[in-house]
Length: 305
Image (cartoon, rainbow, N blue to C red; front, side, top):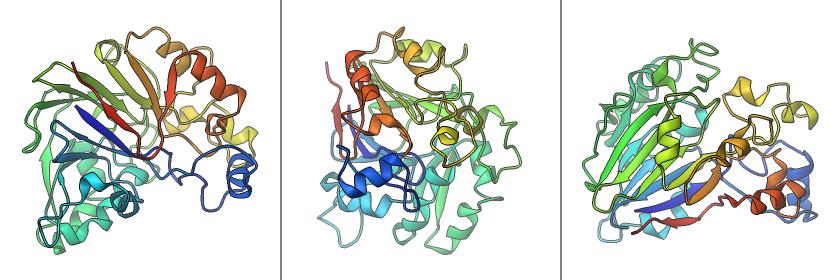
């Protein structure tokens, strides 16, 4: 199984365009050791040739330009993206679909709840009908395994997770199970498994067995502490209110990861305020000691026998 991280940051990227927090200012001024990041998205493949795009960030055009694997040289127009799967209807995971309009039609898998949001409050499906057939919706049902038309060795299962609906959604703060899913991906040819969860508000009895099964976890690392936006002075939302489990809380993500048997534990969707972006920070060093990796744009992950 081949995985490549197109974008590793949370909404706004890093540095965020309007932010002068210690991390963003430090990166611009060269006073911290860190790398710029675009907004969260990955591609996955069973052969390294045709790829499934998991979430379409606002930075998708830039990401494709920097990903040789997606350059389909034998056609006048096109890429090696053969299917798209959405884990939620958040702005930072869906706006990129607008930038892909010249390549329509696209085959898009998502839950009913995500499709409803994307045909009402943020009607991308409706808007893109005017571009060569637009987005062709393939409904997925949580906990029901499915395959896409490309990468036939990969079996996907959408796992409902406790998180939140987007701020524009009528279900904000009262999400339905289909508003946020993790993807459990198995290569049926060799049994290798990945769990991709760029948003995770709280582990529950539904997600835990899947977390325990995965060989590799590519999981939400948005904030270090729940009140991080407040303590850095850039906002009032808590991680929990945004639908993200903080890393360093008593029952936070690091405590959870310490109990899981996965061979690789990798963080993605990292907010610009998170101190782990500074590669010399005590928080980043602590992650290293715990065997927890921090993804970066362009990171390649190859799961094999």
